[in-house]
Amino acid sequence: MPEIKVNNVTLHYEDSAPNDTQKPVMVFAHGLLWSTRMYDTQVAFFQDNYRCIAFDFRGQGQSQVTIDGYDMETLTEDTLALLQALNIEKYHFVGLSMGGFIGLRLAIRHPEKLLSLILMETSADPEDPKTAPLYRKLISAIRWMGMKRVSKKVMPIMFGQRFLTDKTRKAEHKNWIKQMQANHKVGVVKATMGVIERQGVYDQIESISTPTLIVFGDEDVATPYSKAERMHFAIKGSKLAIINGAGHTATVEEPEQVNTVIHKFLACCV
Image 1: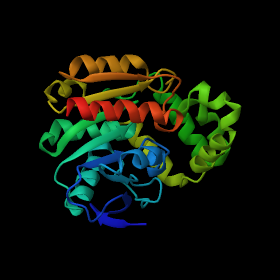
Image 2 (image 1 turned 90 degrees about the vertical axis):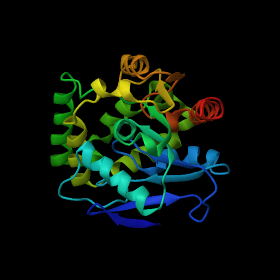
Image 3 (image 1 turned 30 degrees about the vertical axis):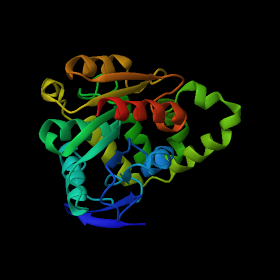
């Protein structure tokens, strides 16, 4: 699989059409504890008409675990450096949760690079003071016991109840637990700290002029729906779509719904 060293880190990325300079580009940025794998269904759906590039943030998936650089600003610079190295000038950006934190920063600081912005299960605010202590406890548990021991407790945060209780999807459930458990302990701890300690950008998002779609699962407990509305009202002309029966990982839980709303948005609004 392709790797590239940029901004003092080696990043893993996947490119559906590395030699195609004609297709418009879609960039996929994953959420905390996951990797490019959370977008497999989206890449399969869009790759006929788009050059799809998905990558792993530092410390997660197959990217390098570094000593530092897990703040949102550095991750944004990683993203910019990766795309510059691939000679990608303009792109549609899809970011879920942590990936959305990066998407917002790109839209605020580098709007000339974005053809559209698709924000999924994310927020423009800093971490809620009520949830931050819980996540710090989770970090301590991971540090001392490892990801495997705490993964089952994390699953109800990452997925909605429809997915978790659907007996016909037990194999998928087990697969995603295994993927979570495969995370590098140090990388996960540092990445989670970066998310908890992030600065909010809500006071800057009214400047976003990029065509924007905000997508939220109606069973998301990690990021409340009020965060979606708050962004929707602040970003002029943005569209808001709700995914029925999905939690914080809608791309996996309800991929057909996600693909449909993104496809309609790109066809009608971009």
